[in-house]
Length: 222
Image (tube, rainbow, N blue to C red; front, side):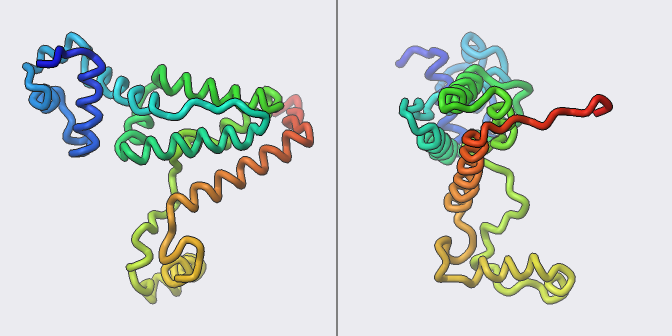
């Protein structure tokens, strides 16, 4: 029998969440998967919250390291898309990351290295600060969408009453559902939409960097 250790516990927990969903994860269920008594797990993780922290670090630790180079934009883009690929393999991970009361060590290391990408690329501390705010969760490869239109390609025409009340929403929904010649095809392609927004942000950051942007001075009463 393979000896139980923290790494094995975390790998088993990640596999269980991947297969059955994060809701199915419990210390008892995990112990069954590992063929041990539940108390054996507590030698390696103090409680479920520590288990979830470790799972986050195990996933985030799989993101490709930054590839050094003079093109900060290419370095940042490659790293963020690597994060998206990793988190896409573990669909539960972004919700667990958001549920943490504070960033875990691997997340802190990732964020620190991304700050380094911008700073080494010639960004001021002030601009880097605002860039990090603008990126938000997109830095880790996921974003919160205003609407979930993932099923719009097969949803059929919008309800006439709703279309009359919200004509601009109906117009966009119809275009996404029926424009078969578009780059994204029928409905919205999550990866295309993510990269589209990411490229807009990175291009905008570069313009500000070249301009030597700095935040406006605050008035005394602000």
